[in-house]
Image (tube, rainbow, N blue to C red; front, side, top):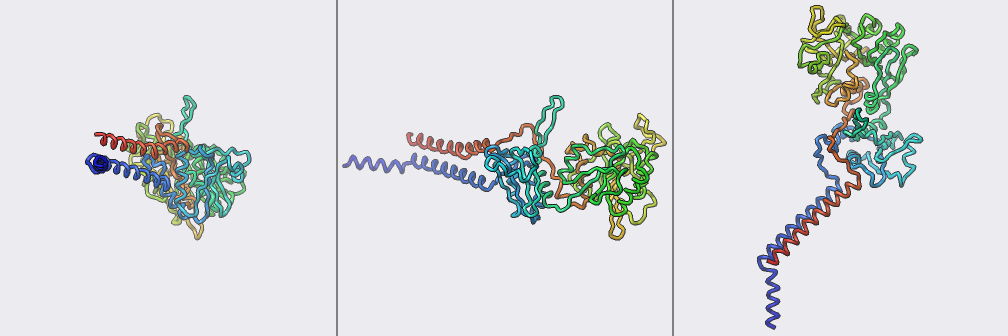
Length: 486
């Protein structure tokens, strides 16, 4: 009996001695830590509470998108078309962000294996809808827009090997653009005047226009009876040959009746050869200097390239975003723009881009040197101006830039430059569209960026939610057993 009592006493003492208390305390702390980790992971997974620590904020929607979407009163469905297990995590994560922006916007995932005919009601016949594509539908008016997966990626081509590399994403830009497209009753239509050796809109620039939901059309003014009624503005992009008298009258009649135009000059064409083209500019208070501009201030041109001007950007609705982002605008091979002395009172001419006081215009177009001659025209010059004229209720808007090379692919493909933003903001101003609802920038990442499919992401979730906490538990058990043995 005494022996049994001794065993019982030893058993009770084993729960009260110092070693047990230390082990129990360690086990309790370990258990609490594991529970906190598990609960935190569950909350984060359920509420999608993820921090975006990427340099480009790849997973953070811009304020422009948030402001635009929250004011929408149409019911919008964003269909994410992807087979289960093939989700690209960066696409899926950004798409799902739209669920939290408005009660009128809902993200729905559609598996093409389970719903093979779903996409056919929104895309053209024989369109191959690939995984991770998106369809935006306005259920209020029935309009829709299909965004293929390839449009969500930014590709860079190595022309030495002709291999492409994904360098960025445009998920937010494409989705927000599609939402604006489906909810807008009227979209701006730009008519690109052709037939005079104009510089055609490049494929890259056309992509930007499509993203801004600008309907681009071409117009042969030589055979046209009038400017189409749906024309929001004309694009006169560096004509080489002059307009006929009838063409100039056609364009002038359109502008006088409240039309709008974006006009780019061609530095290589003498003004003497373009009397009708210049008559349009002169009527609206400006003229072109018959030469190309050289910048004498090294702070206002690209390194060792005085004909690639970096002008001062003045304050205007068109330039507000560029000034706030501090992006420089580069204007290569440009004519100077001068305001005429006899401007009528109904005209308002505002400077957008201007050179330094050290700029001068080279009168000898054949000169091989950049040094200023006595015959050269002294600056400063405007390189871009915005012109408005309002008579009664009729308002005309014109923007003139000194160089059509402003939109050269070599200029607009560099995101650090403001050339593309300047042109798109000019369009917004022309069409009376709020700049903040358009032109969501693409987001780039370095070559070390890893793209995970949904299944890969799930594997990592298992690792972080189960394996790591399990390792903590086993470590705690091991420590407890080892201390008890001591």
